[in-house]
Amino acid sequence: MNYLPLLCLGLLCISCANAKPFMPKSGYPPDPWVKGYADPDDCIGGEKLAARLFNLPSYPKKAFRAGQQGWVILRLDIGADGRTENVRIERALPRGQFGRNARKAARAWSFVPPAGGALKDCRVLLRYRLGSVSLGG
Image 1 (cartoon, rainbow, N blue to C red):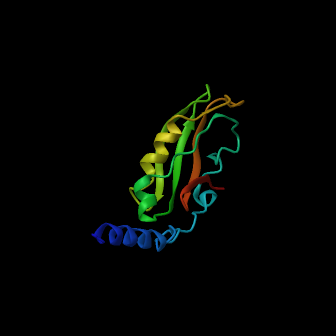
Image 2: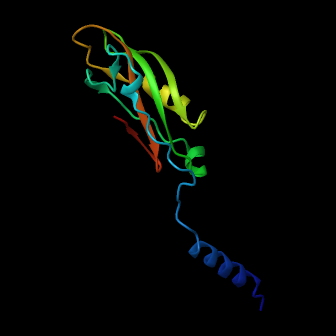
């Protein structure tokens, strides 16, 4: 009788049983203090806004598999019609990992038209942590 298939199956089962749970490999960089370098007239974190369509970005698969965490500060304008305009990345850590993903999601956001008209230079902090994305303060 050939024991090779049984041996392979046994080794496969043992390797699955010893699989370690996912743990991020990189430390989470401390959140920046967004209000500390903003102008007094800036719209920070959407405090003056009510969302109509606001889907957070998905966690990039490549970053998740690598255990990377980080954050992105977006600057954007809100038009009088409530749509986002001029979405740009102000800062992001680690560089090149989450910014494009965050900017793409923000371009699809829409808000109740602001009472005082268009808003300029709104800043939004998005945290990429432990496989999920959340808004920062």
